[in-house]
Length: 243
Image (cartoon, rainbow, N blue to C red; front, top):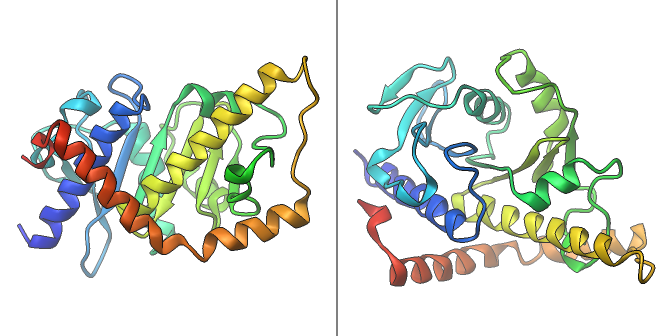
């Protein structure tokens, strides 16, 4: 195993452990993946089906190719996860990491006709950088991959309507940070909706949301520092994800 693969395994396993700490897991469902470097057809690491997020270690991750063949690993994968993640890895060379969640707030906003609203500074980061994919049922149909690709386009995240959230990034750090704040924006929207009967909710005008989104683009390099802070926190609690 190369040093690069070993590091990617540790980073992806860390993302699973952190997601568990943050309450993002859906028992053994939902999935994160990271593409392995190399020429030729893409291959990616993904979680073995049947594991809770808080028990995943670097050595547990399996390698899958774009045809669904397991290249390395002693477990199977979630078929719906393969459809979604392979779709993104096939279409976006810059999307090295893909994170998909079924959080309460994310699924609530995914059920809203207007999707994510510009309610706050956090949601403004996603202004004109967020795609929407119409619900087609559980993603067992490989033909859906083309439509997922079209829905994502060049955006940094995707709301799967009536389903959940998806983020992409050039690294695990990037995709995790995008998901963290996309989910936080959904949590704020859910909280604001609960207060709407008591006080009207104001949205940020589109022109100002565009300005804020551009501001966030200029500090994306800080995601690495945030990721290192997350890793230090995780190491203080439990470093067994590295095994």
